[in-house]
Length: 212
Image (tube, rainbow, N blue to C red; front, side, top):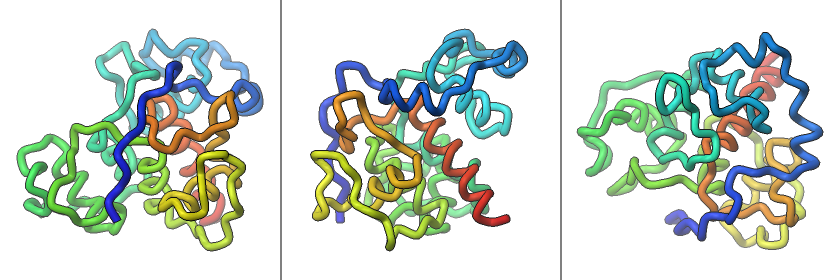
């Protein structure tokens, strides 16, 4: 089924619930603060997640010294992170999508398709923004998460009939997401670069624990 069109971007994108920040962000030591070259993440709620993925060579900055944590992320950029985070086998094929053959991320996109992480379609829209529900679907598919036992998430706009219901429910139940201060999840809102590092960092850690 086609993915829903993104909804309006929130007035304060990238800000997870205050309780979540307090619970999940530890005090950053001087050593951790120096672990990345980014001058725009000091004190940011996602600083530790960004540093974690940067030091694993999974994410890069928008330039050498800026990560732009509150900026949205494109579908191509998100796929590149997922392919790197889950060590997806790279393939050399092209031509699966009409709009990716000359794109810088074509091999990452083709590799994600070959691994069953994304679905075949006419276009991929690599430079379009990816929303929070779409991001969770890609993430949990890559992680091979078992969604069958996911309990209903307590978000007012996430209904059991939504295609992303099990993805959001699983992520909420397992502490991958907690939503916004007003109690909503915002499935159609653009996911930010900071939010991306959080969900990827946590999911990679959980996947590693399950494989031990």
